[in-house]
Length: 73
Image 1 (cartoon, rainbow, N blue to C red):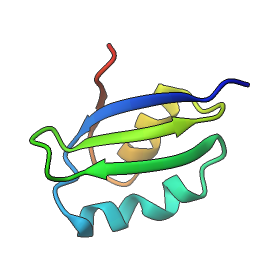
Image 2 (cartoon, rainbow, N blue to C red):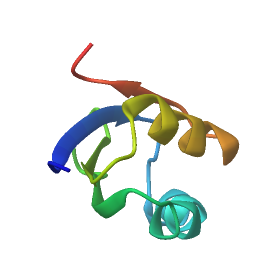
Image 3 (tube, rainbow, N blue to C red):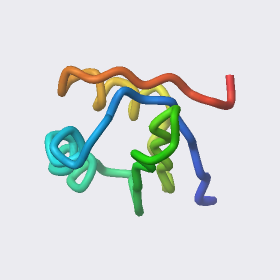
Image 4 (cartoon, one colour):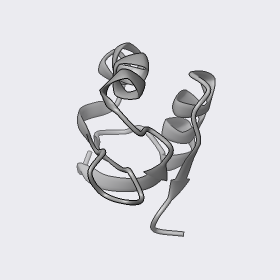
């Protein structure tokens, strides 16, 4: 399966926010690597996917109380 990179605008403003989603993203099946650019005004989350969908990533982020919107829509 081909790896795909997804990007999302989020409200993950700081390291504390990122730490709250770390375990769910680290343990999610289908995510190879992820990173949040908290210095970017849109707080861009980049996910390297190996099977997970954009919708599944958004659901994971929302399950921790944060918002995510795909930048590819």
